[in-house]
Length: 487
Image (tube, rainbow, N blue to C red; front, side, top):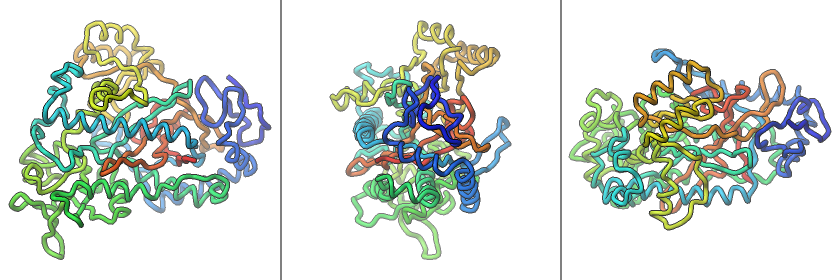
């Protein structure tokens, strides 16, 4: 553990670099080049001024209603709260971003090719590169999508790829989120608040603008329009105000200038989808849906769904409406299938992966199961079909009873789980409620838009585990966010 060697002022007086890669400080405690101006500004301001600005920011978040719903241990308990926002930004230099951008574009191209292949030729399964059983028994595999041709073969116009940095400073992909990736609204609200709180820093730093990202998302959605309609009608389909990410839905709809609709606002007539309104019926061309597959259409999936649109899948198969992302894309963000993404890149693109995967045990053999069971105290175990930080065991942080409980689950249904080594996520300075600046673990959700070209929001959403020692950054588990600057 190294204590900072630079001049210690009140702000960083108790800050120590530990056995992790620190984004602001190197191993000897010196400030990294890209963070020097930020460090100097924070030291000059002092804890009192930083805390006052932080308080002002929190009040602004309440006023704007920037919220997320937290669900309790009991299914019927939930609470809505503002997303914790950390005023110390995460900085990525231009060389790092160029590397990440290339790797993310490569990954999304391969994932999209994989989804198309699974629902058509299934070449990768025939070659035995991915076990067929892993796909056809996958809860997100949709037989209804077999043979369905979709506009531009574009299954994933929007992807959220989660990245971490290890103790060596190397970037790894942690997860691929391809069904309904959330959190993009917080990228923009974080930037807006930082520009109001610290305008002086934006004179000292040349930070890449993120405003084009919303237009890039809208462009990727419009590119899906059936029959290449010049001015397609795009809507965002939300489950409604009680959904955890409803703020995300309303923000994106407003920023893209598209209508926010619920299932009851849409109707299907002669295999065409229409939105009802005071202007009568208007045909919808593209639906950016934030509803899970099984609730989309009660005639095709769950018959008890009140959120979807009866007949929607018939209109989709007939090519009269586009859905983003396509139903069935969950096969590619399954946590076991994740282990095969490097193989996908080689198979479909004939390229070597730019970004590394975290080593993953898929528990598909008895040897792997026994190894994982005997090393649970060292590993992170995840349930394949869950997200948001749910269904996880972090071995080094778990109690003996928690380890025993997971061991029983694995013995009973090993195919439900994957296991990975416990990586030492990088840390960055975070301002705590008591005014102390302390290191906290972070990751990065990059938002990738696949349209006629592939575009990214520069930086994306940095998520931070605000609880001391915690490795869980998900907002659904109490994590916060930072503004992310690409220089």
